[in-house]
Image (tube, rainbow, N blue to C red; front, side):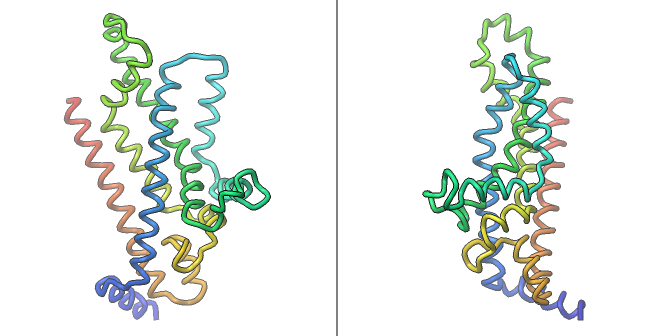
Length: 232
């Protein structure tokens, strides 16, 4: 039966099954939007932590590092409480919409991007500190220079964040509701369809998700190779 389900899954992929690719398209849209927002917020935050010294900085760094391993269900619960009708952002009506799923993924991805970008920028700062001082550059002017120079390393960080977002299931299911045609993404659909016994669709989505993970890792490897050759 499993072999038959696998062949049917391949048939769904080859024939570009509408329901399957609707789920894939929504998954990519949500994850890409979340990673973009997290990058816009997280990279400057990480660079700022690398450049400025202030009371409590160590605590902020420790918290960011701890949040890299934030359990998805905890992130989902936090966002659910914020967006529920009784929550402070309930009037926005985002709960059980793709917007809520984007927010949940941003909460998960932002600490990863901020913490790793801080490490990269600190490494670059150690190399260029004397040059910056000789040029009389302020920390505010150093930030865009360091972020740009670390762009290849940050691209790898970005790919890691996208991998985290695209493979997440707990948080998006809590705040999205897994509604057919509205908030059903690959991970939540795989859980649902497997429970229903619809193995072909679950396998088809699993193949797409696995392919996506492989592409992300291949991209990260290629970026790393380019960076090493540039340094060499």
